[in-house]
Length: 232
Image 1 (cartoon, rainbow, N blue to C red):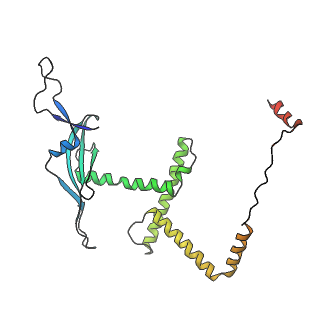
Image 2 (cartoon, rainbow, N blue to C red; image 1 turned 30 degrees about the horizontal axis):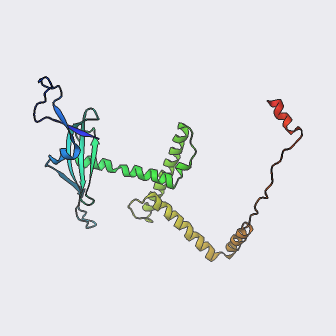
Image 3 (spheres, one colour; image 1 turned 90 degrees about the vertical axis):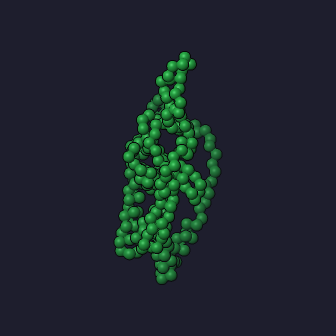
């Protein structure tokens, strides 16, 4: 458990009455930030175009400290979410960053989380049989290209006015493509009777499959095993 190092209020002495080498105590994160009275409220500014009002999201406190488990100085932020009544602590070695910038950079992790979620669910990255570092690298490159191409298609659709300018998620792009295919299929069914007849005929032809007949294994005598003996 992380604790913050702070100077002792009273001098520490050794059992022999001498001044101790380390003159500090370790305090828990929550107890340490209770002593800090200054805070910054972070959120979204008002948007004149949409009429959306200013919205406060987090109440933050920040301090540059030394920790018990990690060497060196670090910048730590206590972020309190009034909506969920939860507290998070964010840690960085960028000592000059303010709380708002630390939280903004931290929020970018959702893009990474979304990428790997799409890679697992839509691209079946977990289903790939990978036994080497090169295989893992190639699989990641392929999934990255798929993600890039889908975003590129989304950008093209936005440019020509077929989609809103707001960026869509990858599942939304896939669902739109599935919907377009469905609409094209329904239109083809409604307008092309020959296509429907061929589709029904193909479905009937491949409807039934016979189960393979069970055959019992037996010992086969003869010279069939001779080549194996010679090879051995």
